Length: 115
Length: 111
Image (cartoon, rainbow over the protein chains, first blue to last red):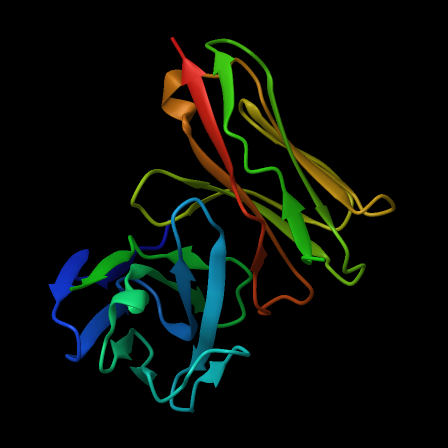
């Protein structure tokens, strides 16, 4: 199957700093990428959908100025958590979908801890 | 009411048992139904994908969709300890649309 690489897998940062998470589709072109957040023992909550070359569409309640998403190429999307606070600590997962496809392939996730 | 409801478990079964996992949903527009498996601290991986109603079988896994009841199921036959994971149902309205996930059911298969 198609491979989506997410980096870093784990990051610890100080409160007030920004953190960037990368999501790459390694063997296909992803016209659409999705970013999710998952709390322990809870489901994946969609944060935003991004299409290559256009602005991301954020779900209700997600602060677009805090969670900056860039989808500059067909193989790379980034999520930047700006001015992180302890309540932003969570598991962030990206997924990528090839153009015209139904299946979305998931990255391995990033465990963010803000101290 | 959540769009997709799934019993979070945990569910514990002995090795070799048949496992039944279920989700209900409220949006009758959903047409694409998926089951994902997620190991601890990892991203989900797609197990089964079904379009509209019906059954689909892949090895020890069978997915069923009953759109009239807004109910989907995943059956695992001859369960193995390696099947221990969280199983998430997901569904979407259109091809290329956004996936809506259930809460996930934590499954433990004991040797």
